[in-house]
Length: 214
Length: 318
Image (tube, rainbow over all chains, first blue to last red; front, side, top):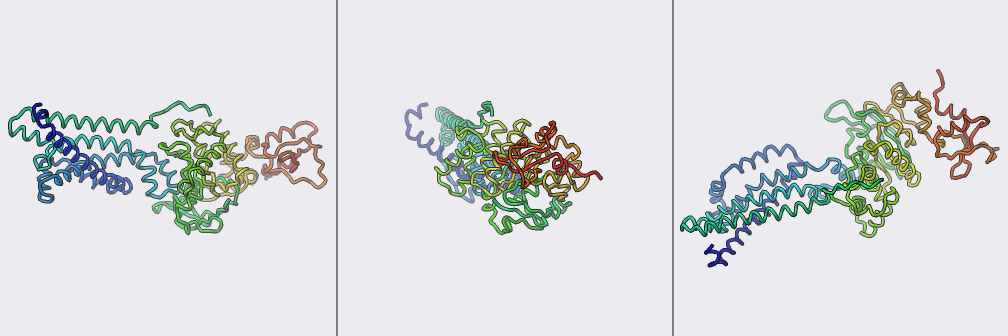
């Protein structure tokens, strides 16, 4: 842990960069996945081709995917972010879709019958009701993103991966340990933070207090 | 309060045999009309065409002489209360928020909505503190009361009810039916009510539309359906030969005669017009009772004797 004690400011700037990469990728991925998931729910024939495509992309090894993107986005944060966004699509789209499909059809029929437009239904009914399932997907995606973002250091995106790759190159066990452990810790923080949020959101649905007599 | 007119309405799904075939009838403003028939007879399809959840293949539906297709679909739906069997309350909203949905969509102010929620909870006999509960904390019967309150929130002229009490136990169902009758006497909405339960239809309806395989078989008052069923299907559906059971379902006011000119109040045994015919029959069976004085809110409103009871509810022998 010598490195952390000697250069805390470098460590924290790398950790900050890692966090930035993760949050940026997650936000961008979610901004795409939510409308895509909604479209797949609405137009069911899209499900097979779109989920198939994202599924295939998910199987491309992360290093290979980033290399393939370099000609398009150059070396640096953009390539890594785009790769992470692509990776997360399958998880986030599938969970958005599952969340939307889990809504009781009677609730949707009531919403339509009461005169809500598609936008009102999406924001007042569908999104809030699908949110717990979507968040479970975000949690999974966050952990994956924290881990894969490590590789980003190889492509000039910075982040905690820098410590790992430097450590390997310089044969410095303390850097390797610090890099590995801090990535793990970051993943744990994301996981637990989002889990807490999920529980909060589920609170009123979890209560099944016995109904008082009519 | 709005009149609804079905004009040669047909619906076929994907070229199959018509789910609804050339149905024409008129729902008078302020009356409760039951769509009755076995499952698959097209009653729910017909109902859903009124708020355009289903669009007819041909024919038209008018509300107060306006073709509903000329109205914007969300605007149309906000003028129509909609109650379904599965209730469909929004689980992430409190009871108060559920009831306030349509007023909110219509842009009411917060205090206005809160006042309306309180008023509606009282109307459906739920305590005011229920406004802050979540649907999952309510029993099935309570949920459907909230569903009814939610449908009435923006004071729509028309109420569509799709087997609203079908999933509720018999005792609660009877109390909800009584409450609907009571509500309807106060509010006089134009109600279309779908059910396959004959007893429910006879209890609630001002008029019943009997449907079979997409066609309107008979459209008449409950008494007329019993005394003059259009065919064997209607007779069997209504179990029209079991008079005693039916008498318990029909209200006295449906068969009473107007007061004769020389009527002297207070001579005959009195009965409220909302009582059922079985009660009337038990009174008429007592020795010495020739006829009954039917009262409405304590005032004489009509008379009923044994012959009225027989001629208005029983089919003449052939």
